[in-house]
Image (cartoon, rainbow, N blue to C red; front, side):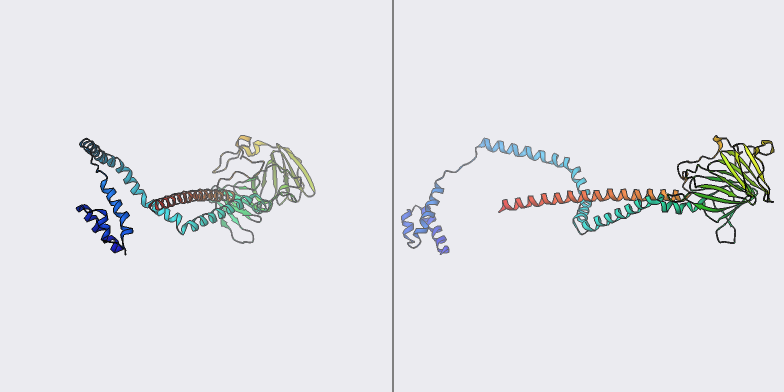
Length: 400
């Protein structure tokens, strides 16, 4: 039916153009007259509208505007060319980043970063327990040996062989140290106490116990022979002690500076530079204030304290190879820390702990920053995707 109506409409329009009337055209198609009449009336109305043609002035002005715009387009394109080139160079990395953020890696990478951050945090905060009671007790079972040349030997606990000591070696309780005739060494304990070992000295770290709430700090050395200079930090706990056992006497202090010298026969001489020193032998005890000394022969009690005779070879006149002259003025003595462990020079366990803690902290910070950047990038990409999707939907709705 639609084909017949279309054909009748075309034929009727042709007849109307040739001058036939509307009624004559409708009379040819009586069955389609009802549908054909409004179509023909609309066609006659449209054909009666006068045509519009632009004036010569309008055409001239439009041509001028069009040419001016065409001249501006190349200049604008030239200005945008560098920006377009830069965007083209960044488009590939941006697409790779977008695929990484919006693809399967958007879950795997943040999870890996979170796990790394948690692991580093556990390592860092776990290492803060280094100075807990258990950690201090473990650290207190050792001391650090500082050597100045190759003439130092040590024997480990339970071992029967001597080995060359290395600078920075940790000494446990039971370690024995021997110094050659041309060597020197220093032992530094966990609380800052130091012992300088002069040439031809044989000494053993006999007992080391760190102080805690339930037990005092105990440092006991056994000096077989030779000469030592002990600088002992102040011991706050009344039960704490620092002592040196010699073949003929026992020396005990709580915070002082003193010299212990033992000869080949076992006889000992003790000189107090600062503080107060207790010397015991054969059930008798004498106290040596600063500037006093005593001598103890094997099997005899300590002698009566007498002033130190510097002309006989006092410590401040002695010199050792590899070390400066030993004057026991405060300015020339090794520095001590009354409040805790000595400052680490990076060669002991504390220095290693500090370096490891710094590495863990840096890795944690970097992981956190990378994770924040990743989250920010993910949020920006998701926002851009939502905006693009919204614009596409609006464009699709307009086309519909």
